[in-house]
Amino acid sequence: MYWLIWLVDIAFTIYRWIIFARIIMSWLPNVDYYNPMVRFIYKATEPVLAPFRQLLPGVGGVDFSPILVFLVLDFVRRILIQLLISL
Image 1 (cartoon, rainbow, N blue to C red):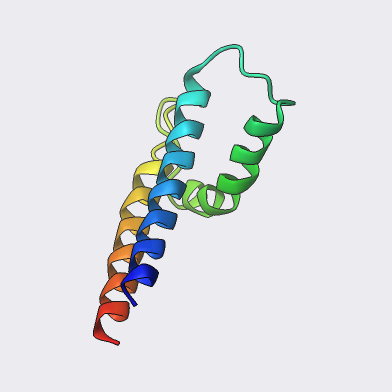
Image 2: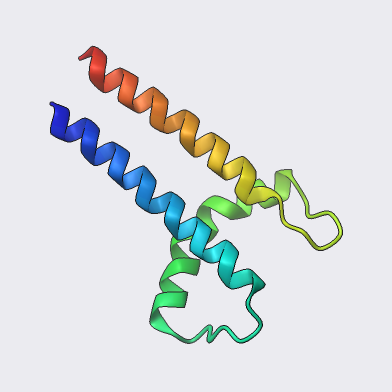
């Protein structure tokens, strides 16, 4: 059972790093959006970030939706791990 808890934790950690990579890419001026890795990052994060972007619109060109996504992902991760521990 502990391997499942470890797997859930690793999956959420990897997804947080993918979102972090997208944040960093948004600051870089010469990102090749046709690069397969960049396209993967955008395809993996856009379905999660888009609804939060509608809830929390950008202020002064700054997108705060990733912060909210990080908070929600951490909350969901903790709930899932607690559920797995209680089994």
